[in-house]
Length: 246
Image 1 (cartoon, rainbow, N blue to C red):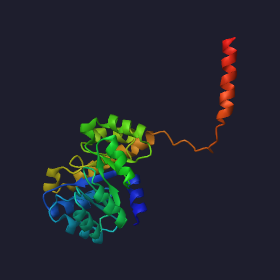
Image 2 (tube, one colour; image 1 turned 30 degrees about the vertical axis):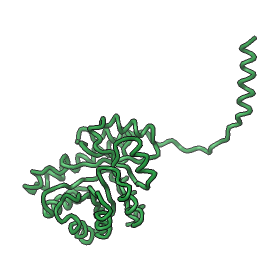
Image 3 (cartoon, helix red, strand yellow; image 1 turned 45 degrees about the horizontal axis):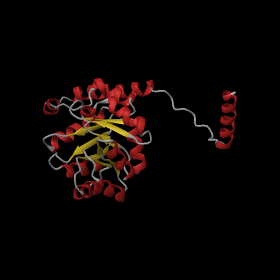
Image 4 (spheres, helix red, strand yellow; image 1 turned 180 degrees about the vertical axis):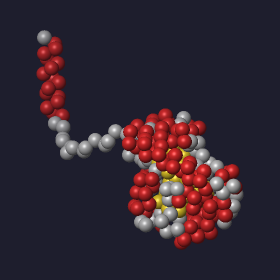
């Protein structure tokens, strides 16, 4: 898939599962399970042992899965992950060099940001989405709503502390998607290979996102822009001023 296709799919599905586990085997199980449950997007963090090899394996053996790399903190890691076939790169903070590598290689990029200044810098630097992290610690859905109100042109991903109970609120607040970790992929469910439990959690998150989007008002139909004649406005205001002065 092209970069545009990846961005579109992330927008459509609205959930990015972040897989941060103790072994490549556990990560492989988690990736296959969430994809089988209807979320064909996985973020393999660089903290996972053999993360780059796992990304390469998933890309080649699961062509319908959108495999991304998370916690990408250096240009070297960005190059390795993109060479392994990662469809997107993301990080917890703003790393402009990582963003540049992604742009050079035609890979979707989702840098992290906290402040409005960082969000703007990330977007102007070439981000396809800006991951607001850790959103729960920053004020939750209220913070996402405030950013969205002031920066409506920037697609935001809410990540860091997103739960089942808050997932819909972040979408309603204006997030294009949510990033979810252990709330979707609990450590004990991975250790015990509880496929059905993870699939049930995946369905709950999918339902939360879907229901929230249905509740959002439909976009307004764009009408043809008209030009304002400010000279006429000045004349109108002047006339009104004279009437009021009598």
